[in-house]
Length: 611
Image (cartoon, rainbow, N blue to C red):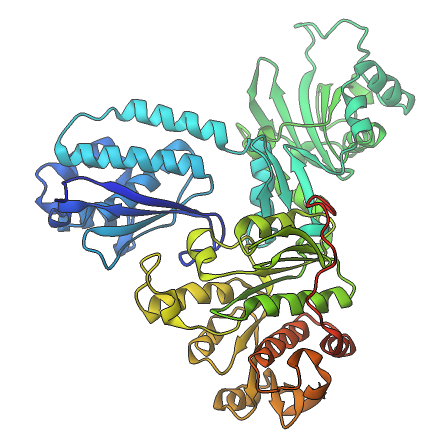
């Protein structure tokens, strides 16, 4: 017999794009038992108790699109799964890690729901979810709940797992929509990778992988710093002299230099470091030059330069101003959250320094999904990239490969192996095989991709797991691969599969269709719009742009087909050459690959090779 309780049947951490959103989420399968018969409007005093403990729920818009929308839903009657979603999100807000995205959806089983909440940090969101269940149950059962203690505990969890403010402001600037640089957290102590593969950079607080160990050592050695700075004519406080006395009326200032340029300056309170006033616009040009020179002399790409000076708008030398220290890991909070004055976009300045001229730190990433045949397509695409001169990582059901070398055996079409490829500094292009189970149970490893391939879908093949029960749900799963194609990218779609064809309008970039038969109506319509397509005409493999056709090569010259142009292997060839075309690989390279392809890997080597 079902109880009047909220039970968690299963919790999934979807670390990347998934059927719900582009962002990481926690998906919980929730059984509310007999509470299915108890919407919020039939529970005496429930809404009042909930709002007393969490008054900020009044800000939730819910389905009405305005503050108070969720409270209105509570009074009208809504179910515990939906309530759990909103309470979890609000507890995340109070803990200092804004949630924002949430969903609660019924499954085909009565009383069982999927509750989904945004989860940048798994541990924090899990703690908030558990606390939300306790709070909702206490409100239902009219039992005491210590909101103050819960809030304090969740804040403590957040402080343990959140990125420090320095690192966070850089990551936020990098991943902002107008920069679009992917980020991977590499450790619990704030080491973060920005970008993928060979084009990545790493940051650790306000230090980057351009910050040399020698420069760090100099900055930490006051006597050596003093000698080097003073030898360049800079006014520097001698570390052997007495520290400034309280009678010293020179003001302390903190200047931030990034890539040789002054980015921000703040007047600090000598007795309280949390008090800072932005003075960036007041800095005298010669003082800015002195700060930049100090950074360059020490050898730091990102530096905090502390000064004692009466007036930042006047030159150092005219008022006995001195440089007190040059720091290799400056604190950015004084500039991002000054007590007074304009916050400065120092995170963006650091990102622009690490990724100049609009560089997004991305390598070509190809994602491949389908009910069947995706592993062979993945091998083909990886081979084309390799022939095109790219050191290519491949994660597929056959294993993990680096430039055709097998480095891990077994099924590596998963989030872990794909992430290892994206973290590898040697990798210049990545080919990643996905599956319905990966998208439903793990999320995709990459935030966006250059090329997304959907080979074909057999809906019934995916029924029975993750509460998948119909074609519509299957469509949502597989469209995820198309959703993440970059605006500058391409979706490669099987024109012979009606469900796949329906995904074309969802792509932010271009669409290339492929099919064995070149007379499909969808190809004709695509050609009328000037679109690209790959198909077979007669005995030839055709590349078409609009109504213009180019013979790539005769099918008889593709050994992989084994002399049978009607075989299932032809579908893999078509999908792969279309993906290669989408990647901009030269046609002569594609021909060579088609004529020579072999998916036999080189001898295995240790799994850390090439990292």
